[in-house]
Amino acid sequence: MKKLLILVMLCAVVSGGAFAQLVWNGEFYTGLEFSSPHGSDEYITQNHTDHHETKGPTQFDLTGTYTGGIFGVKLDTLFQDVAGNEVSLVGAYGWVNFLDDQVRLSLGKISDGVWVTSLEKEHVLDKNIRGFRVEFKPRFLGGLNLGAAFPAGDSGDTSYDGEEFANGMILGASYIHPLFNTVAAYDRGGVGRVIFGFNYTGIYELTDAGIEIDYRDLTDTWDSGGSVTIDEKIGYRIMRPLTVSLHASQTVYGDSDTDINLLFNPEVSYRLTPSLTAGLEAELQSPDYFTTINLDLVPYVDYALSGGAYIYLQYRLHMADMKNPDHSVGLGLTLISF
Image (cartoon, rainbow, N blue to C red; front, side, top):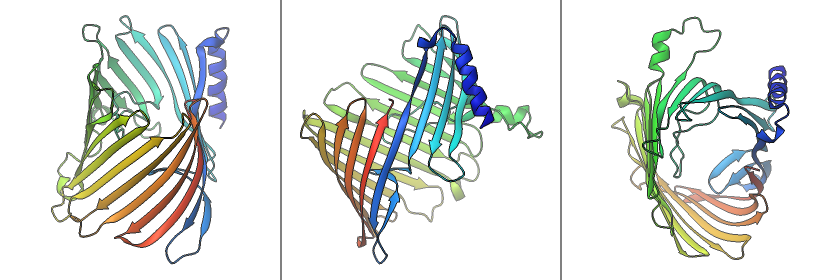
């Protein structure tokens, strides 16, 4: 906590008379969920579960960013309503640009990723690392960003050497074009991991059209712990208020005795008014070629507020192997990038 206060004070000192260049923003989530599981008593929890994305209890992510010409600093903190973990320091790092902003060096506890897939899962490897990252954005090919990140060992780990430092390198590249965007990254650390994403953006009515790949465990232990997950999603705005989408996922495991995990997630939404949207989302998941089928059915209503915020109300039906239904009703508030 003392370190957090010192960092806040440093940001204030650095900003000095140029307070206009110090920007605070963040995200806020909170909600209540009433659950009625099959064969058990009903209960109410403080839980933010928006559609299929669970944020947990009340969460407040506050970031302060100061930019001054060719350099900048960022402080990223998380306030969460969990006993013993009320405040945590997510990131505290600085960066400096060289060669007319073609090269950026970031150093510290880096909380933002730059090589991120932009479909359903948003895979990222260069986020939440302690160390440094170098990005190269050449002017001869606008939209290209490539480079490497180097996580460092803990300050108390005297056994961490140069070889481990090099082996933990993360390589990344992304390219943004008016018709598409694509990204790839490779984490050499641990068991090895590769991510890839491609999105087509050339048709306005297409809200999503792309693929994501997450390949885990490139070492000799692939047969026992490796997997590759492929996610595809397509969404289409049939008319201005009506949008339909389909997300599909396949996970193949290195263990030949484990079946492919399959998932299908269709959704339809309709904007009733400029502020009110109603929708229906379903998720069919099977770990064994549809011998077992797990179902989630989620009708929901979102009410948009000013400033990028909205209130959601949803009902969720969950059936494991299409039996023993569990019911829940959720009400929550979301503020994004206020």
